Image 1 (cartoon, rainbow, N blue to C red):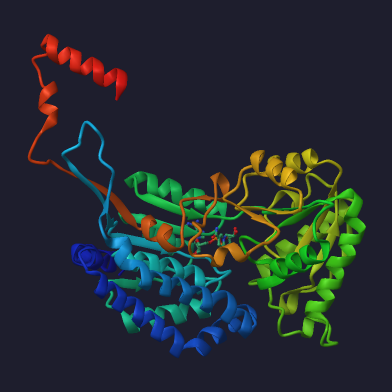
Image 2 (cartoon, rainbow, N blue to C red):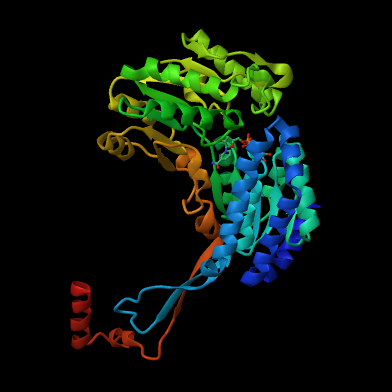
Length: 465
Ligand code: NAD
């Protein structure tokens, strides 16, 4: 069945590749209308998957998809138009331009943590660029996966876009097919498996992976604002966000003041109704028992190694609840400081000098993002120039994802390739370069035989142009 769908799309590839802007926009409009009509069903599916709050789904799944979609609709004509390129002296009479042409048959493999956004977001770019698409959603967010399958089968024929649900075995089977591009969002570990499979056919890949995005807070930072932003960005989706702050490095001089502000912010956001957090409908759950156990083991491991919980720590496997948890630590080889946390646990680590904070970051793999809270430009420049990451957030965090003009992606272990807006369109396109000869061919001058006169011209060319 999988091979048959792939074959259908393969046979239809040239048709879709050659669709006009208007046809592609029609497809985007169909998706837009479906989302607006079925907004409640999307929210219910996510709630059934991990009790994600309805408003949070509106904000972090539906709104960014619609905003990406509208941006693509507005700009598609411009993106599809051939881009002329400046002439060079030697090819002065040639016409040169770039056309973004569809890659062809693409595969999108998505994760469970933002199961709607991270499936439909890349799909919008793939459609805009003129591709046929097979989507493999995560098996962990089953309700959202089923809904996406319904949506796609309602809107598109299988030889254009199809959803194939299933576990890693299904993914592995799909990876055996000769796709023209694979767009994968998920863990670094699985990203390496995808890269190996793609290498067999030299298929191009985009890997949107994970990692440990650090936050540095220096003594000049606006501490109250930083604390609120960190608590919002960390506990949104219960820390199950690829660009969530993974851990915080805090200047020794302000660590106790800052810790208090973090606690105040958690209470303000999640306890102001008077209920305890477990009963607060704004606070989602961990996706599965397996993920829950991994997180609680991380807490245990930190405690055994001398770290101290300063807030939270309670959990309940039955309903996959983990309280927002702040852990003071300086343990370099604990699970919370070595592995991506991907849950509502925030290690707080003190540093004395900026160099120490930089060293801590550089001892780990290059993250998706580095966040810096400071008013000191020298400190900010020092940190950015001595570290590497897919992106940088200065005095803010997480919001960069929603900026469709900003290419989004990681570096090394946190990923390769870029998505969103024009960057996403380019990802799913073959940047094809065209050169067309003009009526006069200046290059004739240097065709053999190499007479003394021609030698002089070549010499001038090499020396001065
Ligand atoms: P995952 O790697 O376990 O799974 C992602 C997808 O890959 C799923 O569809 C799954 O079925 C499939 N898969 C799993 N094992 C496979 C295998 N052996 N072969 C082929 N396919 C396989 O990731 P996850 O747990 O769903 O998502 C969490 C991870 O994703 C975190 O590391 C997070 O940081 C990362 N992430 C990154 C971004 C980003 O934009 N950079 C966004 C969201 C999540």
